[in-house]
Length: 317
Image (cartoon, rainbow, N blue to C red):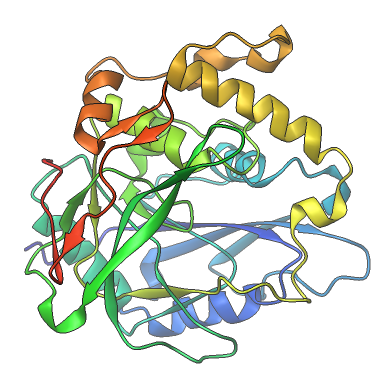
């Protein structure tokens, strides 16, 4: 294992979230080498909000009027276009997270265990309740959940006991927007599509990255926690915006074109789509075969990736 930790750009899209201060403070406090971390925050706020990032020499923030926001993919695209520097790695998280001691050193060691220069570590972390109520530890592995009304695949997690965790990261096939650790070159090669809205961010990035030759792994230890519960002090983008229906319709058109080849009725939905295409190193059909998902028929052919308390090795990295 390498003795040298890499520099890390932590990307946070913050939409009117008061938890962002606690998230950043905890991330830095729990890190082994906070000096190697630079945090970029795109804060989308309204005039009376108190939801900006804390002042810290390693935190850079862009603050915009929440009324101008076009959703999380748009925000994350801006983060990487305008704030990513020459850091070796990216950690993408949400603005409502908590961390285990030494998460940075342990996460890099986990990535090295993959023995794959195009490894991406990603999953849905366990949930916490503010301020710091953490659950019992379990290992989570992403799996297909269902196709929603727009025909977009969304995920669920399988879990198995912490005491039975494997010795190395678990081969997966899925990208999570709320916990992503990757060489920075991945998101330079496969940039975020700012014209996606919310649903579809994860499955399209999964397919695009995989077809460009990147491989996914689920963590084999617990390093972070995410707040999934709805908080009255944390409005969602769709709570504030009247244009959500149009943004979502455009997003569905782009997802379906990418994954099924379906042409949209509105040609404008595909503006700049050539910049956010599939890769040529591996085929979409091979991804479907690996994950046992049929995008055309909107069918999931395998539902459990964890059986008898242990992960089923469906995926080969």
